[in-house]
Image (cartoon, rainbow, N blue to C red; front, side, top):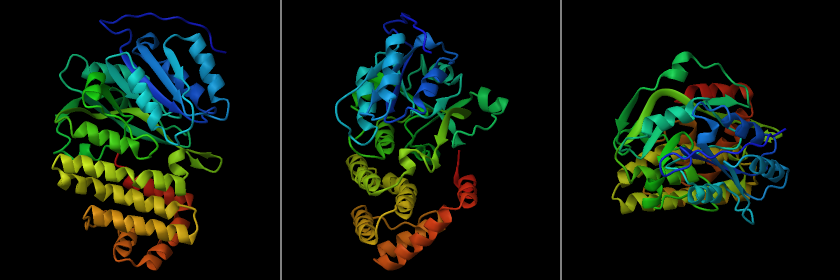
Length: 359
């Protein structure tokens, strides 16, 4: 039962300390717990503006959100018409609707650590910086692990240039950061509507428009819930033709950012990681042979357009990618089918995450 509460807490020229943007689509199983988790934030629930934008859910998500918005004045829900297929529009609307000085993003099935909003706000507030970021931990299928005291309390930070520090450059998630709203408005930083990989697109715009980011080096404030089991699969793990088509095209837009900024050498660094993801999507797609042949042609064209000839860091992906580059599509297809079978092994998947999860 949601109890009615009214808030009015003016801070300077802003009513709230920060705005949290949550895009939703068919999240009836998770959204209530996610919103309720924000009520436990040590910064004070009354200091948070929650903006939820639904993408035409067909389950009971809309009813759940409506009840929340009717009960709490700081929970603001929007229901634009039509389904764009990705979270991009919801995040953009959230930026436009936000009224506080700072903005954070939260996925509808994830959570913040209870002190995350307070630490992120205190880190960036009264500084000259436009972005602060923390680390995240992966929660597999809602099975939480115990954090140490150091994970919770270590708030030491460093100031880094994202175009020089490659560790920061690889951190391209939208949701483990706090942003100054005026910075996003000044450079018109938005997500590409109707496309996936929108977080990479968004972060690259941020990185190309600043040379100083505050990095909380050891604080794990964001809890990222990996849902990849049958019947409980998040959108980014349900890889199909639609996902692939709405993802790879985004990289052309990112390429144009770097070309305009005369930073194509950094784009090459980015794509060493991203081509691994692209090959991973290709491997996991449950599509017919003809479609996969078409997608290999698109991957080949993309690598040609970007003039990308680097070796990928993961052997399996590099082998498939090299055969695509040589147009040995049949070898690449057979290899991808073998890797796909291995990825259906829970043991292999867990071992892979343990090896390659840098956070």
